[in-house]
Length: 92
Image (cartoon, rainbow, N blue to C red):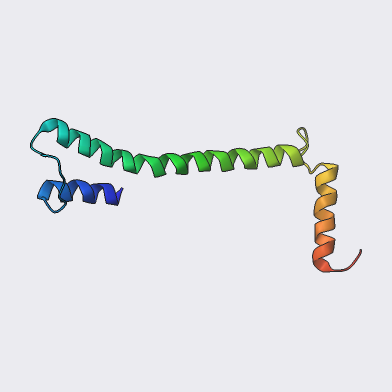
């Protein structure tokens, strides 16, 4: 967003040269719209990644927990137990 703001100001003050005649309204609007769309790409990707990660967390919870009691399923409980045993390096 800072880059887009910088580009708008640089074009307004003549610091950034363009081949377009910025006195023509259509050229100015087109340039500003193009620069503004540069900012929307990363924002859209970030929001999609956030939504994807939230859905993956929900899916993992549903797969590993009982729907009624919200305790670990047998498979998830056994996997966590094996992981803890492997971390300790000894059998219980």
